[in-house]
Length: 243
Image 1 (cartoon, rainbow, N blue to C red):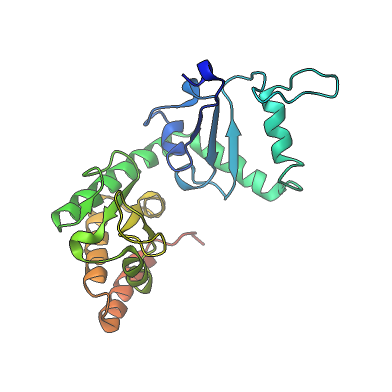
Image 2: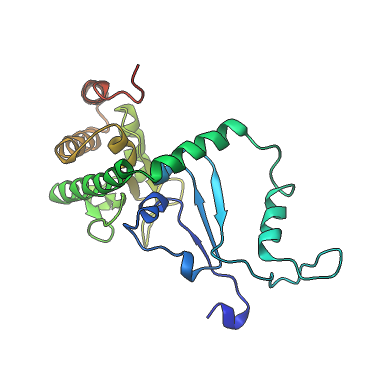
């Protein structure tokens, strides 16, 4: 349909790109003109991005070379990035991306991706059991969007309470949200980071218990301090980097 009207079809796979790379989720590359992704999130590399194409083609905007030939779309994208919007390359970040791509080719990374989904599904199930409404009812990937209106909470309140307990989430709008984007009615939770630190399904049950306890005590600083201590005791055994 896009081809028939001269439109470009682009997919952004920033969140699930790691899962797509291992064939766990559907690959949009054969169906889209352009695919973009970050290099962090499930791909688990440094902050950065990629613009990808399955095959090159003449740009439909009419951009031409100095000789009057139609530019290929890849040339338009390259010029848009540099010197259009980006300066000098960061060699240390490029090296870090190479490490991430190498990890993504490994069998261990496939095990990681499978565990990411198991952990997310465990968390979703436990949250539903505690009366939280998850948009779509559950998850088939690494994250979930929770509508907090059933708990009479806003996303902003939840984000703040969980932050005080050293649990990092972000507020997020939900379908038919009646709150502003600065307040929202939901939060978004994902499992990639905790999976990288070695958490399994049984640990995720405990994580949900801590999340629920923090939300139910959002106005109780003493309880939030106790929950924060439990969080740090739990995660202190799973450092981000080993000595």
